[in-house]
Amino acid sequence: MVVDFSKLLNIFLKNWPLFWHGIKYTCLFAIVGTFCGLVIGLITGGLGALEINDNDKPIIKVAKSLCLLIVRFYIWVFRGTPMMVQAVFLYYLLKPVLNWNSLTAGLVIISVNTGAYMAEIVRAGIQSVDSGQFEACKSIGLNFVQSLIHVILPQAIINSFPSIGNQLIVNIKDSSMLNVLSITELFFQTASIAGSNYRYIETYLISALVYLVLTSLASYCLNWLENRLNNGERNKKVMEYAS
Image 1: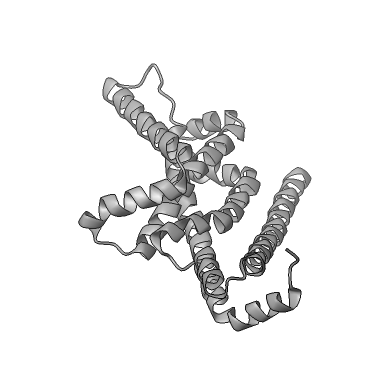
Image 2: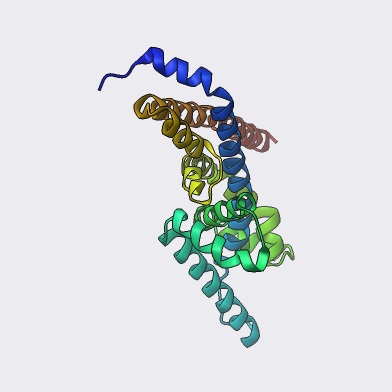
C-alpha cells in the first residue's frame, strides 16, 4: 500500500491537539523518569560500590553485605524483566495499598526501571575514577560517604554523561510501554486516532516521525551539553597545569 502524503498531512493537522497531548505526556515521563532514575541510580550505584574490608567491624560487614545484596537483587529484577510487565504487575499489586492513579504509577515505574540501569551506569562511572582518589580522600580525613559525594560522584557523572543522556532517549521511546495503564502518551493517542480513521500506515508514520524528532532534539541538546562539560573540564585542567 502506497502512503498517501496528502492524507498524512490532513490527519496530522486534524488531530494535532491529540498528538500534542501525547507528546507532552511522553516528554513528562522521559524527563521525570530520567531525573528520578538518576537520583535512584546515584544512591544504588554508590551502595553497589561499597567494599567490604577485613578491618571492618562484624556489624559493618553485615550491613554492607545486606546493602550489596538488595542493590544487586533490585538491578537483577528490573533490568531482567520488561517494563510493560513491571507496569501492570506493580500498578495492580500496589493499587489497593497506595490507591494511586495510572499517571502516578507510570512516573514511579519508569523512574524505578530507569534507576536500575542508572545504577550500573553510575557504578561503571565510579570504577572509571582513579582508585587512588579514595586513598587521597581518606588521607585528608574524609570518610567513604563524604569522598563519594564530594569527589568521586561528580567525576563519575561527567564520565558517564553519554550513557546517562542515552537513557533519556531510551525513555522517550520506552514511555510507549506505559500505554498498558491507559496513560494517554503519544503511542496511546496514535492508537486511538488510527482506530477512529482506519488509516493505520499514515497515522503510525506520523507517530514514528514525531518520536524521531523528539529523540533527535534530545540528542542535539545532550551533545551540546556534553561539549560544554568537556570544554569546562579541559579549561580547568589547562588552568591547573598553568598554575
